Image 1 (cartoon, chains in turn yellow, orange):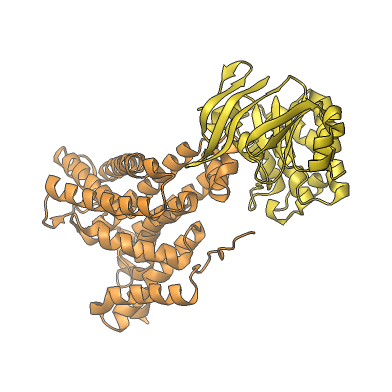
Image 2 (cartoon, rainbow over the protein chains, first blue to last red; image 1 turned 120 degrees about the horizontal axis):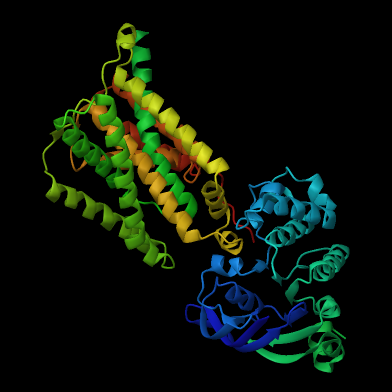
Length: 235
Length: 300
């Protein structure tokens, strides 16, 4: 579904990722793990078209999408939950969800999807008229994921969904990620520092170091890889 | 007491005009963090456009009401086109440049537009046609406020109502609010941020054009230079209310208009501008975020 070929991207004169090639298949959960500053978020922002691609190609269903405006990429079904959640602080929970469905016109479908995300995260239903900025970190993460789901994405990009969350909350978030994948067959590309949980739920994974892919394999294979264990799992 | 009420209404009228211009400053600042110094010139172009259209229409003997509506619409559309073009030419190419660059570009645009109107029209003051008729029912209150004050206040009220509706309930309005709050995230939900920015410039310019036409009809003369002082005053009002805040811009404008009116009425009209800018300096010292502005807080 998604293919990155020799991707190079960065900000101004700084190249943050170089020669990254990877692939995410239809219906898969793929995790990209790596340390702080390895370039994980840059990869996602380049896919979304926010950071410009300096070289290489981004293919979505074999069509090049690098160089498209971000809104065009969302139109093609690629939605991102960025690092730090980026909730619209002065919009209510409900309005935040409506923003997620910005490109959709089917009122009935939108209402159904709001019901669906409220079953995933009942707490959001309780807080629907509260400003997004007043939610706790975990609730904001739930809202950010729900907002992305409101666009009915075929490919969901998640940037550090567990960052700053209590262990129980982060467990719950990963459970929901699996459920989203199972319920709708939504393809998920996950970027994480929390290598353990990210690899547990992933079909496959990649390891990014200093802007380059250094390892690839199935989730289980990476979990048992001695290098990964030493560097990312603390075993 | 008579005098007080008279000053009060003349202050309100002033404030209403400032508000129409200040909204453009504050909306643009809210979305891209730029002070659009060419905004005063857009207001001036609005006044000139309505002058030209109204003059032509009166040659053909159009009734006054139709003249006002057509001239107003032409001013809004034409100024909107200017606002759009200024953004495309002078600001969009600098979107990723350091913040100082678009600011300098804005000042350049302001000088360019002023001189362009100076060359294309004239450097003299032109007398503006009397577009606002004397309303018969206003005779009784003529001591306090004139017909043009009433028309200006009502028009401003209606325009504000329409603006509030657009921002609150329409698609483009929601997109504008989202972009102002978090432009990266706005992109990620599929909002075409460039289009939102263009729309903001067009709406702000249209408001300024209405202000330009109203004040020209009120005062009775225009000149290529009127945008400068009006622009600076409206900018002062926007800062006073809290730049980036829409209700703030309206409140700031009313406070500024009333202050000027009372100060000129009770102290001296020679110092009209001094009072406005003293107020600006005081606000910047004691409440830099403005009356309704939020404190800029950086999250770590």
